[in-house]
Length: 321
Image 1 (cartoon, rainbow, N blue to C red):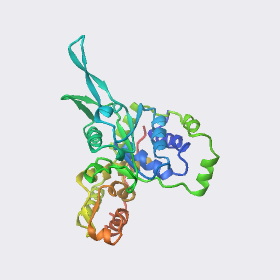
Image 2: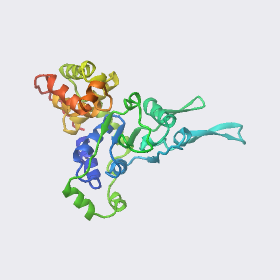
Image 3: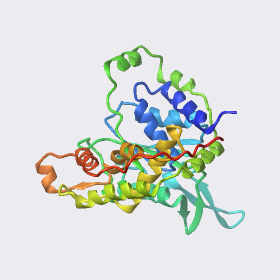
Image 4: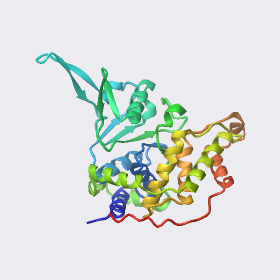
């Protein structure tokens, strides 16, 4: 029987079959899934954002739904609605596509703020509320949303307060020349997706998420995390720093990253690796930063270089499941 580590490696290997040359992006997305978070992928069209989500869904054997967001998509189109049943004289809830394990919100910034807020509320609460009645979503529940970058026509960008609901923000970028040649030579995307085997199921993924939650974090690591977050609130280029929700996200992501490295303890390097991914979409830069053409990523990297890491140590806590 495969261990949890081996199952994680199998999932990553299956996703690599269709997402070429983006190994690090695949690992970071899977870490967010193991940490129980939601993922925002912000990039130009055609670089494989949707393919990444569908590959993960197939590899993990999850019930998935995809909605292409447009300006006329309403909250009921996502959440479902209540319908009057004449024979019983009651209202019956008709499930929307949100009732799945992995929900792909394609081009979330093309729809109205009202529909965006409805989705983000479910992400936070883990349930749909229709006519005052709460309907929990299945477990595990993961939202992978794609968003076009600033400057794309016909878009409604998510406000910073809503972006905080996503655990990480990734950018896939264009493939290098060798991988683009491989893509050009490859078969159709539909055939490639059929090659992705289901190596997990929903229950197994929930168990892996529970294992990740048990990863050990030393007090020195907690202090390091909080110093990094505090620095974003004091930086001269930042108007709005990382929230306490971001602090929790950084800890959970560091645990998941450690697990993917086959460790049951977090090191300072795990926190260092995850800090930019959980932070760049949570920051609001001030006028000084915009005038100086300073990016969120540059500010975060500066903070990483300024905040001293705790001394190296080793905690021998290994998972044998």
